[in-house]
Length: 251
Image 1 (cartoon, rainbow, N blue to C red):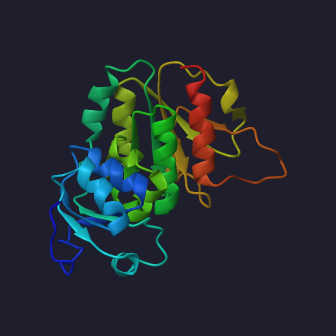
Image 2 (cartoon, rainbow, N blue to C red):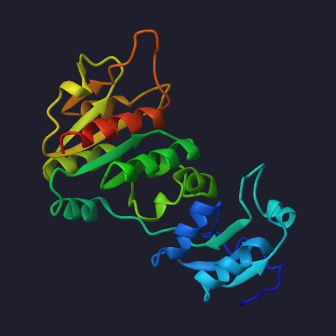
């Protein structure tokens, strides 16, 4: 087992981050695309980790010492990993990848800013076979420990496409055969009634403001979830899970 000075800083540079929690950390360690700096773990976890990942630099700390490395009341389960953020895909690379997938699905987020919501959405994308998640760079948080924890390890294999201009990226998707569907609580058509064949790019806006006007105008169709009139809306991560499930039924 490799051991390093426990006083080494957890933050390596401006580009590094710390993942925490068992699922997030173990999935990152198994991902060859993830550049690892070092792992901080409790003695209870050290033996298991050193056996599974003998080449990973390991620092043994107690729970309180790991607490100090993380913000707030993070539930780290005795594991914290200092690593590099994952490389993303470009919109062009995504379109090339979609050419090899029948009935490809991608999810687009417009101004969804909560890292835990995005993490939960990543998990749903992975669960229901979405090809990628697309977000606008300036209106979406960067990869973080909170996001990875909510994604429960699925961030390691779901590509994230960060774009500068969402409307322009939607037009690129259309040129590559995607039908663009906007989720709108006031739409006339419910998602269960729409044609789900072919390549679909689904846009979800923030819970409060929904999609921005230019983004909504880029949609080929808008649909809504068939929920009770007594409920105005759902949490965006819950709505995304239901939407992705519905799209998976006819793929």
